[in-house]
Image 1: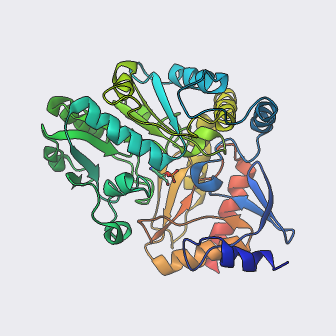
Image 2: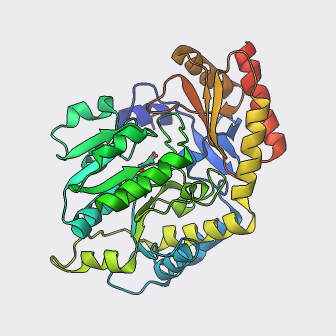
Image 3: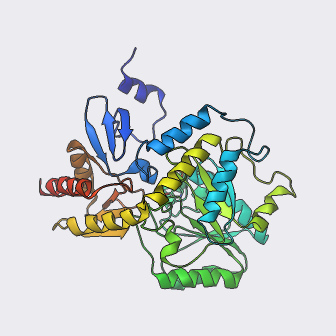
Length: 393
Ligand SMILES: Cc1ncc(COP(=O)(O)O)c(C=O)c1O
């Protein structure tokens, strides 16, 4: 048999010429285990997925129990499947009024696609407004509203009628007008290198959308489920969107996305044409039970509050002349060194010390800290000691 690493390169489609290529044999809590017997402290959490930690016993038990009952039985929306219904009911119970109807899909980008289609149906308009440096996914619609030209230029033509405004810039809200179907915003930008907007801008954004009759879509794929210190990032600002987009941690480690709106709005997808948005695997019972169990753990163990505390500890400990800024909210942090080469060296150096950090798509001068939200004070101290030692090396 060929070596696993050779087959990885030969037969698995690659996304870059330089994958980290850790050979994973296990994971639990905040740690990953590799075939060569090493243990890594995970400051990435599968890119903001494993918010309750890897293989939480409650999540694993829910998956096993459901696997013993049934897996896929029919494309989404035909049968009553208790895992879907109960999870949608639970999500509605933790969201504000007007966000009480959930459409489950398979990923964050697919959830954005559904949200864009729904916004066009509701408003009868085609215009879209998004932000510079945003990231909303890799399919054509989501890429169209992604504010990173480097990721887009090979894929044109993309969706027409998309305009970009600067994030957190009040002057640019004038781009939202009576032709705008939806404004899509990450309430805290992730792959831009973690950018937290002013509350005043968020309120002005909400007001401008309402005034223009445009729908406000918050993409909380990365910020959702406690990551920023609140269950959802919009709660920091007291601004509620018309459509909420979810993914990543939603499935408790299983692949899942969702867009959420009011029952009346979502009902538009049922007619003219009937089956206005469909998916074979969306709302598969395994991610539903896993996500439901993870949300129960997140709430019972107060992990959003822990994210807030541990995030503050990271900020307190990461003080070094080479660090320009540690910015973010909760456990969604960017450590900005102001130098892309230094970032490369520090991330790889930390990896050699058994600490896994990661990069951003649109901010080469910073690296990402986004561990499981169950991380302890001791582990935060261990992570910071490794980062500071690497900065001194
Ligand atoms: C804000 C945001 N939206 C959408 C996506 C796309 O999600 P997925 O990779 O599940 O398609 C991401 C992924 O990083 C994201 O950060």
